[in-house]
Length: 126
Image (cartoon, rainbow, N blue to C red; front, side, top):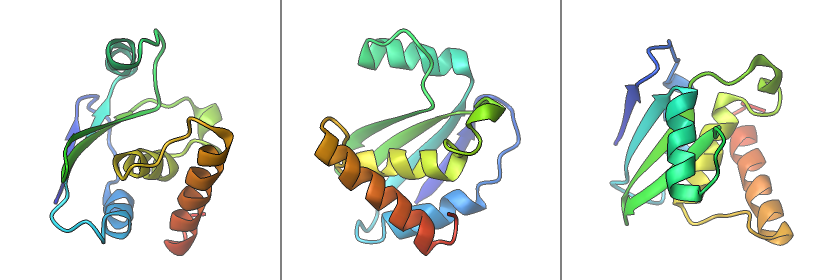
């Protein structure tokens, strides 16, 4: 199950994100995901509290239980990021974190990035 919350009151097309959710979490039956579109100030606050980084974030993921998580997406990404950091890619990135992927090392970064690109390619979003 996936649900969306829009704290930023900005229109978002969630159909693509539902497709990514279905593909990414297909092996994890009954995974409950809450997706929150948040304003930059809220993203900055979360990033400061949970990652000790005093800057806004594009995407933050929190695994709450084995089969339940949240993805917070910056609702106001600057236009200059549209090519590289688009909403489907950021959502996929956050979803992969919930599945245990990370980018703490160069090797793990490459593995995660390949998985992101593969998912987007399969769904014809890249």
